[in-house]
Image 1 (cartoon, helix red, strand yellow):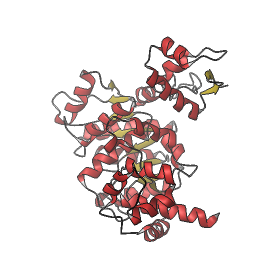
Image 2 (cartoon, rainbow, N blue to C red; image 1 turned 90 degrees about the vertical axis):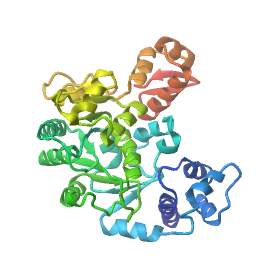
Image 3 (tube, rainbow, N blue to C red; image 1 turned 45 degrees about the horizontal axis):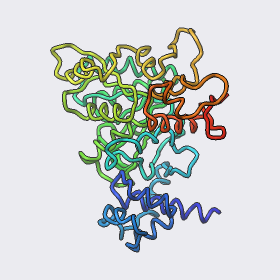
Amino acid sequence: MAARDDADRRAWAYLARAAEPPSAAVLALCDDLGPVDAADAIRSRSVPRGHEAALEVTGARADTDMSGDDLEIADRIGARLVTRADDEWPGWQLMALDQADTAFRGGEPIALWVRGPGRLDEMAGAGIALVGSRAASSYGEQVTSSLAGGLAAEGVTVTSGAAYGIDGAAHRAALACGAPTMAVMACGIDREYPAGHARLINEIAAHGLVVSEYPPGTTAAKHRFLTRNRLVAAMANAVIVIEAGRRSGAANTAAWARKLGRPLGAVPGPVTSATSVGCHQMIADGSAVLVFDAPSALALSAPDATLGTGGGRARSTDLLSADEKRVHDAIPGRGAVTIDEIAFSAGLDLAVVRSALARMDVSGHVQNVDGAWKLAR
């Protein structure tokens, strides 16, 4: 069994490097063949009919197998490869990526390289992403520190991208509270980028998690930041933009949040501030909710929760999306109902209801009984 597990892990490591992430074609091949046979098929350049796309996306790297070296490097720096076969794979959080309408950039990662003592699924399931401008103003950094500190004090994972400006302020504030924080990188797990944040990244790895879908040695590149942003949005229960220009990496992360159905918040700034133009636009067009402190940030991801007031116990439905809550409310407290009945009561399309029920089945909110659905107890 150990030998088989090792073969699977090396296959996943090979596949994670063979294709530039994300790669729906490679994942589809793995679903049909399993990781070991999928890796062999790509190496031999012979795949079953219907999977030719997997050869196209791996053509440049198929002959380079660095899986052993990658796993050794990860082990040397205290990192690990997490795959969908592992218990800590954040499957529920990543599920939304398979439903994004830009599949060529929106699919699940093949695998994730993880460094730090935190458990990936738990931190991703309890996270709020704070993102914003690299050229942050003193106002932006002050607001970020206040938000991150308040959220961290309530056990929320503060998630960001370890960049200069807002990202760095968010991570530092969480660490100052003695709370774990998660940095999602656009480079290899062994790279400290930006170099000026080497100490910060190492501190995050010591107390929280540093995560990347890119194998060791991979350098940061513009397209990788844009690809990385989907993971920042996916592995959080809400995304809050503190400062952003009209076109920026933070605005891209915000767009992913909307695409994935994650609640989106934005912090207003001075009307004269160029770094708040993007936030003001999001609030004005209704795509983002105005956020101004930690309680309003928490309410965005868990509307029924209270922060620091002792006003009530968090509910199991707090982290459901808007569509999932409508589906949940459409199921009676007793008995089971069909999908058609749920769709009619909720006023939602059947495809939306099926998707919501699948996610809620995985999260334990509902259960299927002889083809009908009832609330789980």
